Amino acid sequence: MGENENMSIDPNHGLRLYRLWLEASRSWSDVTRGSQKVLTRTVQRSVEETRAVLDATYAAGGAPYLASHGRLADLSRAQWFLWTGAGLTAAEVSGRAFPGAYSPRTLVLGTVAADLYLGYVALRERSRLSSGLVTDQDRELQHRRGAARVLDAAEALGGVLIKAGQFASTRPDLLPSAYTETLTSLQDRVPPYPPATIREVVTRELGHPTGDIFSSFDPEPVAAASIAQVHRARLRDGTEVAVKVQYPGISGLIEADLDALETIFDAVARLEPDVRLRPISDYLRWTLPLELDFIREAEAIGALREALADREDVIVPGVIKGLTTERLLVMEFVDGLKVTDVEGLKRTGVKPREVAVLLNDVYAEQLFARSVLHADPHPGNLLVRSEGGRPRLVLLDHGLTLGLDAGFVSALGRLVRALEDGDLAEISASLGEAGLPVGEGTDFESLLAVVGVMLGGERRESDSAPGGFGLGLGASVGDIPPKLLLIGRAIGLLDGITRQLDPDLDVLEIVGRHLRAP
Image (tube, rainbow, N blue to C red; front, side, top):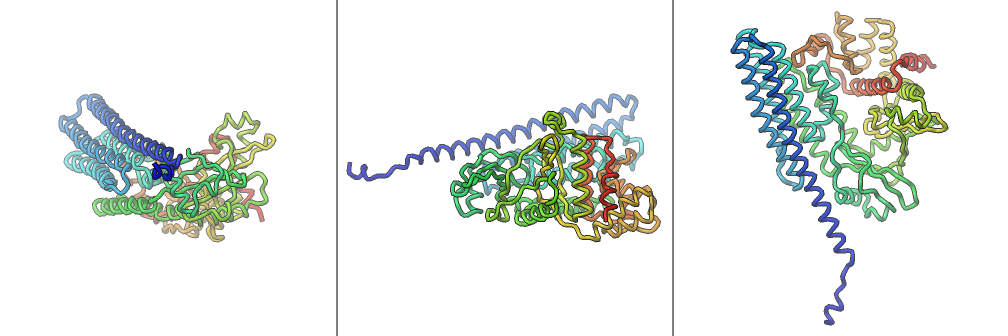
């Protein structure tokens, strides 16, 4: 009895155990749903692809027997790879519930790559036997199957693959239109990590339990992307903050995925020298380290705040000093409407056209007057606040915010003016100055095609072979440098937002004001 009286019982111990059990159960439930989603999507793909082949065969009517037989053989091979890849993907998703367990991610990528490669080889070899054995419809069926495989793998595995797919969707010089159109649907959103995992990361990075730093910390993230997720919290002094938490082990996973992609791309290049996929991994090798380093991001935020300090119509949420590490970033919390929420803007009295003008003016000033750029302006990173019916633009997520040297900015300005004037020689010279050497004798159409790729231009419908468009450009123009592609992607994103807000806006007139400024 006396011994029992001296025992100390923590009344919160049972509650903590219950919470841990609840979070583990939730994690396992998420994994199970993820595996089920993979298999459900596979069934849908199997049915869609079978129906597409049968419809094409029936529509062909009098097509030669061998052509129809070849098409069905393509379907049979593709179905085997589809279900093999689905089994490996489901295993990878299920294994996430067991940290340290073997992950077949590389096998999934290898299976998808083998599926695509053998599909195109089969078409090529049959066409060599007889041109009548392969039609444009056969190529389109293969393009659509291949694009679906890449999309499904990226959505299931996440991480680098989502970013690779998003980037590939902007490169019509590397991939057929079926791929670029399909991959535009990729969103950098992933299921969030469990609250217990996030608390562990925050505690480890700050050296204190979350309760010592924050009076409240919302366990549900306001955003969850491929590298980190963001939580709303309140500091002990009452300041509302956004806490960006990098996923544990994500840098190693990114490195492994990049190694796998480079191995696959190099193997494809050895087998098919005309197919150029390495620029995709080169771009990611350059941009992902920028996004992984939160200390660098904090410095970039400071530089952009200083550059735009004289503008009252722009908000760049500041960094909370002393609470930033390489994997944790604490910033002021600022909310607002998504920049593309046209109806919401109207309800607050803000005119979409005014937002479009402000958006393009702010980015033209960054690029041509301040030499620093928030280079990831997708709609999720741009909010609008109404101040008496006037818009204020909020710039979020600065993993790709970077400074630009004066020579590079000058070259971009010359390029814009040369495009306005249609000056072929000046376009060539400015591209070379920006880091993209252009060979002598390059025709005007090719130069415009290069600029179109940089700015997210449209693909010509006549290009049907993987990399076919890029072959014509590659003969006279080298690989586009990652920095140029990053700037071009940003401009392309801004153009897409502007078209939603005010498709008639004269953006060049706004840009011209900054180019003409002393």
